[in-house]
Amino acid sequence: MTPAPRLPALDGVRGLAVALVVVHHVVVRDPSSPVLGAWIAVDLFFVLSGFLITVSMIRAPDLRDFLGRRFWRIAPAMVVLLAAYVAWSLGAADRGQRLAWAFAAATQWANVQGAIGPPFSPHLGHLWSLAAEVQFYVAWGVALWWLLRRGAPRGVVIGAVVALFALTWVERYVLVDGGTPWNRLYLGPDTRAAALLVGCVLGLAYSWGWLRPSPAWSVLLVPALGLIAWIVAELSFLDRRTYTWALGAAALAWGVLVATAALRLPTPLRPLLELAPLAALGRISYSVYLWHLPLIHELAQRVDDLRVVAAIGIPVSVIVGAASYALVERPFLSVGRGRRRVPAAP
Image 1 (cartoon, rainbow, N blue to C red):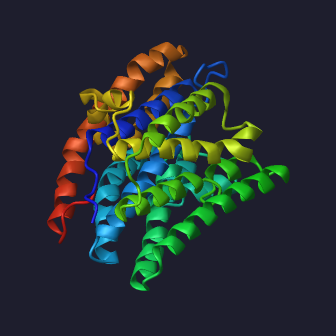
Image 2: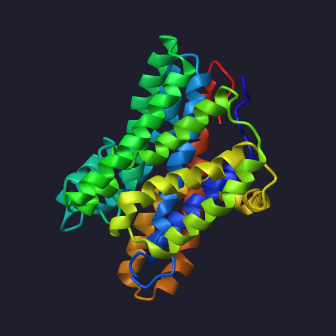
């Protein structure tokens, strides 16, 4: 079996993704921002999650072990955030709405709640992506476990995932053509599945030894990063092009980046991804992601200058995220590892 990839470059990929997302939530209030499309970094998280979770599932001794490890990875830090948010919201005039948002986040339903209609939480709205990932962990974990137990041919499994990727692309195009609201397109678990599915294909190919080093990956990385840079500079999540083609194309582009990192290819980007600060940010990226939006939103409510919001909000988000990682994530990850019967997956 191909060993699970535990590489500084993958931590760097996480760090890059969370950095772009945090920047997006700072500048989203400015329509003239030169990085209007930094939201696309969420899809990098999705590709990476699809890849790592697929590798983890194939290595897991059973479905219960796989889902149990996911629980200990996700739940504790989120419970702390939601408990703090609920306690802070009890004195707010809109506490009923805030408690509803917290309930949707706690039940991993925030993406569906946001997709079917407003309002969308300014503090917890980012948790839609975590809900999408949890839904994916369960659905894909059960499906892959069943397929592996049934002895489904590997080519059929990968072919089915590729077909689903194509169907999501077609679905988005049809929905856009029918005038579907942006929130349904941006938040729907079906319309945002493309990047997760690309990660699944990479994870299957890696685990089965089909994903091999090749100069072609380094060649593909140049146009892939060029496309991502163009999206970051040009495409708002309200843009029609985002849903007709950009989400699918970006998923493929991010897939190239993840593949080059997992294969440890000597690309010009590898030294950047293996920088110690970026890798360190990647290791605490989950907690930083959890805490950054409520902190930045509250600061932006009190400060008009986005430069000040960035100068204060970004480092505070990293500090609070690091504290959450040290005090909550790591202890509970140790609990989860103590229950494992196989070496830790990435």
